[in-house]
Length: 502
Ligand SMILES: Cc1cc2nc3c(=O)[nH]c(=O)nc-3n(C[C@H](O)[C@H](O)[C@H](O)COP(=O)(O)OP(=O)(O)OC[C@H]3O[C@@H](n4cnc5c(N)ncnc54)[C@H](O)[C@@H]3O)c2cc1C
Image 1 (cartoon, rainbow, N blue to C red):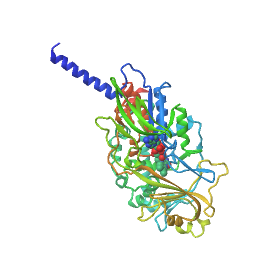
Image 2: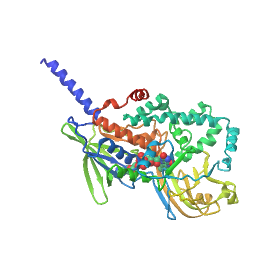
Image 3: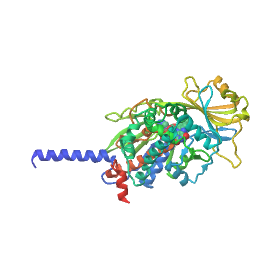
């Protein structure tokens, strides 16, 4: 064979090998399944990943799930008077189909919702108050803001309708190699642009009035994401969907979904802090060595596939370092936003809100406008995670349990402003969700051939369902790459494809 031809063949084979190894996630050429998979983090993202990995890779593969603190992560409860209250992620939309499906498969129950009125406070007075009469509320909205609320409703519904396509794509087994590809498949460049453009800009363009944005939208962004109306339009829409009426939660606490999924996945749970992930060459392929610290030991083990299901931004401090990767793994930019949840057992100071007689204070939730110096984002009467048949909200003249969200831990004088007196305060200081605007980039899904990162999706929108969607996507992506089914990844025009597949 002439030298140039053999050289060409050799180069071609390198290109070919490089492509199949690189793009397939390093499946061995004999088609053997992976023997061990690691998932770092047992929040809803990590536990849902374990569940979906089990569905796709089957019963033989060992799935180890590492957790350094408590199963549930940002789904957590605190106890007051022998009752538990959600201190992290609490509400779920009725169209969040993965969460619904988990609850069904696990035999969990929906928690009853307890009616309660909402008002918006600007630091001096209530500027918007919900009444007992729906038609009166609608009339007041129209009087104050024109048809802004109808425009907004239509906008959110259109986005949700497009977002729902993900369930069809995932049911048909399609996966995406990046958050950008996923969003593009759902809503084209429109969705991608919404991750960069501010919510206020998008809404103004839609014809929503500035007054409506300041008095209604801003308070919703403050309670859901602790941030203002400059957050990107896509996460803004996620937040607005979370302000609709058809919401639910899990009876007994949302974190039950995480412990349930671990069991359903028959995952091997390891209570440990993962400290290092190193790349090791193993003949033609390679493996990842995870070093981790348990309460008593320092241990390490090798894995074919690793999924990181915890934020890697510096201020979240996952404590994971990466070794042996050449070139080095990309830095994950941005930082997480601090939101403090204070669960207070006491008597609300209704005088502060202009109601000297607490018996006349009619609101269960107080949202706030973006007023300089206002020290809290929201304050609401909290319902326990178990609601018995005779349950009723405490009246403001009675001692009740309240959840206050604030950007910093509440000072004593701030607590005294909101509460006449209190028995207990339990503080959870969260690095809660991305600080939107701290980076323009959507983090990668694939950090290295078979090393995946789940939490990049939070930069499009942070919610239990978003982590669940990312979990299903990573399980599918890892499976298809391992089995070289590249035609199932990043396919264009999926709506059309799926229709013709039926
Ligand atoms: C106050 C608050 C209110 C919210 N409200 C809502 C809401 O109403 N509805 C909604 O849908 N969403 C809400 N969210 C967002 C939602 O809770 C999150 O998007 C979701 O829970 C994220 O889940 P996750 O599994 O991706 O991450 P996490 O829950 O953060 O899980 C990551 C896990 O990894 C563990 N970990 C980290 N590093 C390591 C390591 N090195 N080794 C081992 N383990 C490690 C952590 O301890 C943690 O348990 C809220 C969040 C907060 C904080």
